[in-house]
Image 1 (cartoon, one colour):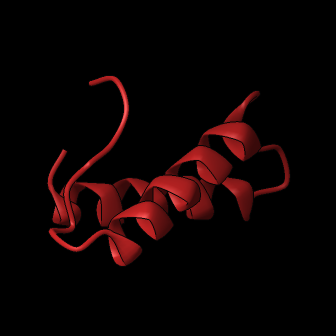
Image 2: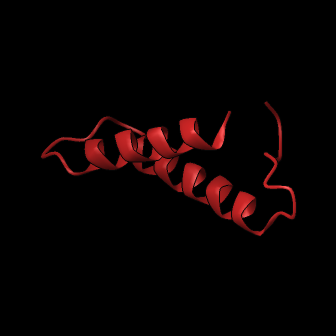
Amino acid sequence: MTAGALADLLDALYQNLDTPEPEFGAQAWYELAVEESCRRAVSPDGAAHGVA
């Protein structure tokens, strides 16, 4: 996933969490996406990690 696509996903998940009834599991997906974003921020090449 590109950095832009990850940012778009984070935005969509955050917007979903900001609704009265977020989708089931959205919090967990948001936390995973934030972790990946943080890993990329500290990675020298900004590459994705883990299983694709």
